[in-house]
Image 1 (cartoon, one colour):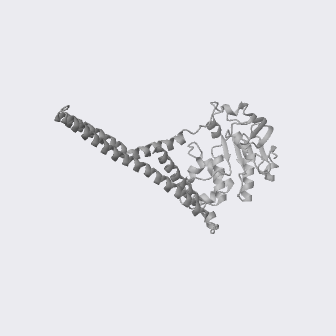
Image 2 (cartoon, helix red, strand yellow; image 1 turned 120 degrees about the vertical axis):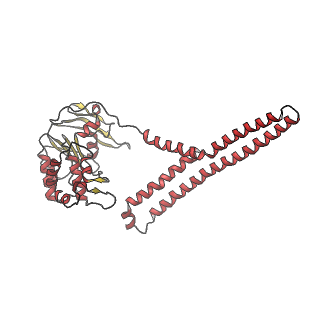
Length: 362
């Protein structure tokens, strides 16, 4: 029963997950109107769910039938044995009635247990589902916390990383970034630019060689504290369902609104915010009334810089941003004296102005 309940639950969430995916990719499926793939997959997943649900109900039905057989068998056995003992004068009528009452109480208890087994299976299935989340491995993190806010240095020696497929991202990568330096990471797609940035943020642990920040191996750092000192922007990031201010600050209470206001002027977001009736309190909906991509990119850029980080790690932060504001953003980054900046980009204007270029090859 528990096995069939788990299977039913898994297929049910499979259906829900695919419906969410259909909602996310509405435009793509609508443009491929002669495909029918979305309905085909929905039908297949729904059929599997219904089959597993039918199988689970079959288990429950078998248990109910077993209960009826059990009650009939026990009652019949009780009457036959009791009457036989009573006729042979081995028990009296009082003992017979007492035995009958006890056996009926036992049968009722068993009946209640079996009738409520579906609820038991639901509870056990819910616990199993929760455990799939709570038992996931937790990111390993050290205890060292950066004690200085004067700058951050980054050093790698013979750094290498290999994907699970066995394909190396890069090997023997060595460079030194002193506090305040501005570095560009260049290379063709697939050369490992994103991987290198994620290594610097402690996302991947199983690298070869050495990677240290301020002379301390990255594995010794408290990752939460280190990332709190880092401005991060990747193409995979997006806004979430919350106010504009929440999307910028990510709940950090120490962020200075005046500093954010200055950044909005530089990156060209001030007129957009001024046009909102509720300003920073405007509720953003990433799945409904969507914002233009250049506006989202500017919000993400604000998120990365609002807390005045000492280390900035970004991948193509000016994608989709107007040329005028792109130039302003690059000027802003290059003028940050005590901030170490590492940006993966092939943009010539930034690469030519960076203090160091890290070129990765396939």
